[in-house]
Image 1: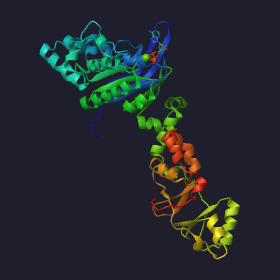
Image 2: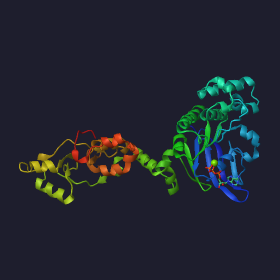
Image 3: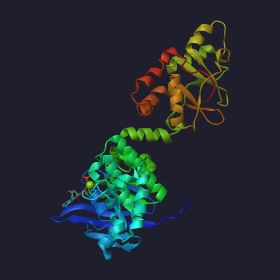
Length: 402
Ligand SMILES: Nc1ncnc2c1ncn2[C@@H]1O[C@H](COP(=O)(O)OP(=O)(O)OP(=O)(O)O)[C@@H](O)[C@H]1O
Ligand SMILES: [Mg+2]
């Protein structure tokens, strides 16, 4: 999108030292732009909550400056500031003695919206989260945890604030409710164009929701990146560990080309060579198939040890016994798109060609299995059964649909 980035929150070398000298965060420099979904992620005690709470002056920095819409928040009345910033706290935080209607319209009431406008807003919002309008008269205790959290989310949207802070809002929910609320929040954020700052220590949640992920450790920002960039270039071993090897492998398959993992210089032979030479080459290189390329390096076919022994007596040249039908893949193809086809065919290896059909290398089944088997197919029994035994199939062969 060509929209210009408008900073909504800017941290400028912000520190927070608690009484007693406990340094919670140090040298925080971060810009949060309008419309971004920023996830702060890190281990417990890394400073996420502290970083977030300084935005609406629930905590005061001990050093540095924070700007909200370009203005130093230190110069602003904290109560007024908070009315412009929605906040969803951990474990929902609905007022138990207030109805859902009163809970949702808390800030609009403080902002002195007329009753009619408040009612309309509350009804509009509760419909957005698929709850019946008559629930507005209920008390929080009459709702399930997931329903309460829906109300917590829309309460933060009620006053039309641009910026919403959420501190592990879904931590206490079961995985299914959690996922549906993630979808809800992402959807609301996108359709309403809100800016969200969201604390989590769940990497899947961050990868799903964020447009920008901020990784924190020991009170410092370690890396700020889009989910894709984070997966592709984790800045430190700590970030790698936080992401986890499985996700990194999966992400690699999504961007890695066949060419990047192929073995170069495969054993090959030209069609004019004799079968004696072919046998010698196979023996020397300890292989049971040879790829056949012409003098210009174009892939023509393959020969294998079985047909070679069978036809040895009546043929003389490689060209006589060469099988022309073979499965190959393009060097530029994404591993993600090719891996399934390669593995399903049960081939031990597949030749890799460039766009002119010149042989460039091979991808071995072993290398693929090492890299992606578990993450793409998981441990599903179905899939492992589908993978045929390698020795039951020709090693290179099949139709030409590289
Ligand atoms: N009121 C306080 N007084 C003193 N130290 C505090 C206070 N609040 C937090 N800390 C310390 O500041 C550091 C950062 O705390 P913070 O709550 O920001 O971490 P967090 O990343 O949100 O952790 P969690 O994932 O457990 O919520 C921790 O070392 C914590 O012990
Ligand atoms: Mg916290």
